[in-house]
Image (spheres, rainbow, N blue to C red):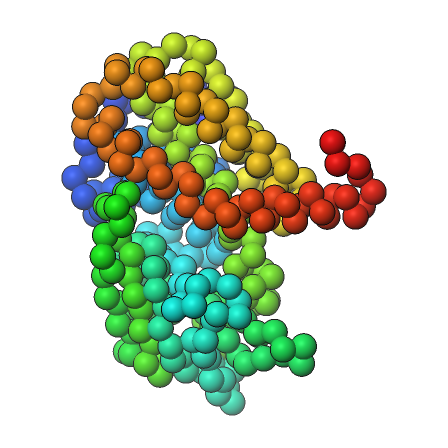
Length: 314
């Protein structure tokens, strides 16, 4: 962590990012500087050098995907395709994989709200193989070339916050995949379930780093900058731990409470920030609360797991 912070503070003044392509070039360039480091470091560096919340989020998301699936090509933008018309719960996944005799198969279905989907070259698609004996969906994750025959990507309307980050509706019409495109293990337990925490950690790491960059650039007091450094250290430590461990969820919940409190305490200092950055922040800070309900449910589940093991709730 010491070397990471020293490296952040030595970076040149952040420059305006023209568009999503410009962000991706910079994300890759700073990623080379973090070669050999864990993905959380790439998220933090990307967030610190971003000129707005949206691109900080994008760096966190891209790093989270590569933490989840390390074999993803580093130079190709990717998107995780889970959500369908009925939401992102495993029972809502109806996009189907019909297996062939050679272990490959064909995908048919439709996904929505695939983050960075319009620019993705590689799609990680949650598919159903039908129901298990207990009635639950059998989920697998499949790696699909976004340019494969039968794949159609349609850009969805901009969101009111972070409109720079596009989302896609993705249609699969009998898309052929090889046996090697099926990622090993249960799609839900090995990928979808841990990704919720992995994404939280990498995105919040990037956003806290972005805020630290704002604080340093505008000359905010050290009483704001120091807790931001502490938050980054805590988030980084958790990102290197087991994302399914209940203790990680408890600690993450505590860090996010501290982050929310620090954001409120920083409010008077935004007068020192340029008007465009301040305007974007007011527009985009809603992003921090996205998936808050699901996050709260995971935190409650973590407390229940701790209680079952005999540790009393404080």
